Length: 558
Image 1 (cartoon, rainbow, N blue to C red):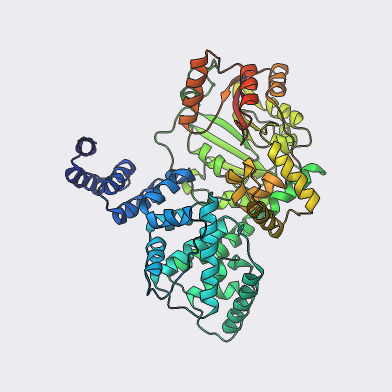
Image 2: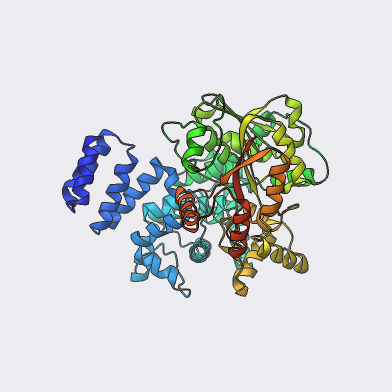
């Protein structure tokens, strides 16, 4: 719109006052104008108005949740908005302490941090993928428990809001942070005291309830029904909703999920059980839908402008299969991205599927179906698809190549498939960690996953996977280091399979467009072809962590 363009012109010219005034007018006219919201936040930072910038960034996160997709970017913003937090994260000796009574400069510094609206929004919207911040929050959590146990409950609204956001964070990461024996003792005493108070119909203080919720999900308490029936302040009610109400809804939804095929025994049944126990992955917010929806061909051309591929037929009515959809985040993003999408999303785990179904926005309910199925039996449905998404699935099957061949049978002529497979080169540290796990007897339980993470961090051992997002929640850490079955592969093996099964390689997908452009430029400077898998194999040998997440790539049925 013309007003936004004028605001940008003022902003670029350094005329911050007029630019701010116009950005505000744009937001009055179009309240969800994300670009104006972002620019206004950036302008406030330039003016040194960090409180206003924090409020604006928080508003941006609500209207455009995709701005929270990269934790490194979130952390960079937090460092700018909260210099005291940045200083404490850089000081490994810092010992932050919650202070319900704020009589000191240190307490006021903590109050400034915990009252920041962008910090609170980030905490309740995504797992913390950063070891120093995890350490800081773990120390804060312990101080909250001490204060609650000592009846230091003069907690103001800001303290309650922070404790609620921290409780939601801990639920998202599945309580993955280490807990000391002393904390467990205090927690058990607090839980017993609260149970006794509820039995006598005593009023429960929100601060004490939240001190429990930052250590364990409230839905597991024997008095969860009583808690859910009471009225609470909005911040506490959101925790009750997350930890008691929504898990109950998901358990009820399990009975409504269609079962399309039987589930095989053996490895397949063991994999299913893992994901029933730990639905994967945990997530809190879904990115806002892109507008307008894009044809699949346009998406592929934008990501792989040099790749030879044929247009997909029926581009305005795409039949899409997402296998191994887990808790549904990627399947929902697919459903709201492509024009004409009709999505069947399948998984082994009913718990994961119920989570996906509960999170499905009303706008997508008619274009996506979640169902339980064993992909080796999907051919019995008699359906074929224009696009199959199979990221992170084949390598957990008894025979990954057989599973891949079954999916090829479900592809229409000229259909495309996005595949994700683990790299044998990039997983070397993980295989070493698994040997340590076996030698030391760690089990795939939440307690032992917490213990392993704590032992690795405090030992000073440096493994590449400790920086991966998957290290920072229970379900993803279990998937990363304790999986019941995993097969790694190499680019030459992939190349051989493609040649033998009539698949044309389109290109590797590095997620963010910046990653795509980086490797496109790198290969162009060296005179290499992006479609040359032999060249990629050599490049991976030189850069063994290149595919630390997975090989993610697109192919087309020839």
